[in-house]
Image: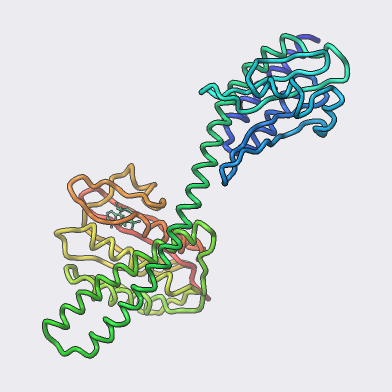
Length: 380
Ligand code: ADP
């Protein structure tokens, strides 16, 4: 009987350890901790009280319960104003009475993060053995709670950062759009010559700035699940030709060769967004193939889908980075080259292609070049 009890306790201990180490979400850690420790002590009810500093910097006492409402503890003399409660929160160690057991949970830095409270209507149910068990669990839990708090803080900061980028992006977008409009007007009215050349250079830089701002806004929209798509039938071949044309205006250092099928391929897409993907592939092919002058674009038809690829003979990507380059803000440190960028383009591209039920992949060899692919379902 005793052996079975020990085994049961051991299983519970293992599950508490697992729950604590696997989860980063504070509420579920604490609920699990309260449930398991209540079962371990054989208590009729258990509670974990903890102090949480909210967004406004105010301290709030929160709790998770197991087996009963907090009011039920009152009949055992444990309320928010009792000495048991106060003493536990001031870290005076474990307090055991006939019907209650209170264990402070102290962070590695010595701060009392919270307290575990247990009650049983039968006196003498809590033992020294329980105290020992709970001391171990409480110190494990404290570390997990500390981590979970840090994780919550990082999440909050991350959301604030995204909000800031979103607002800043909008603020930047308006003047840049206005400047671009005036420059386009000027360019149209200016005869060929040095002035026109300067205006065109300025326009290229403004377009670059515009693309950067769009990327910044897209990243925040993707994160918030708010990037909208307007899909319609469209010719993939026309779209590819247009992108090549656009990119050739931006960059004259490379020649783009293309191999396109004779028959048109129809896809159901948000054409502006698919253009964004292909333009990103093309600009990357320029950027990451310094000293080279050829880029090769191919479109092929496969059963049910069309595959678009962009090949360069540039610096390539080391194998170990290949799985990461579609992640947000991920950039490879190409040691011999300093190439500017923010690591947003491929992340956005992957998201766009995923949202079209397509797929995206890359083949690359360091020092030899890269081929980026995306495939889209054909519209029939
Ligand atoms: P960015 O170019 O602004 O850094 P991307 O998300 O477009 O952002 O690309 C992520 C990373 O993938 C780049 O920093 C670069 O290291 C690598 N990369 C992308 N395209 C190529 C390419 N054609 N050749 C070599 N490396 C590339």
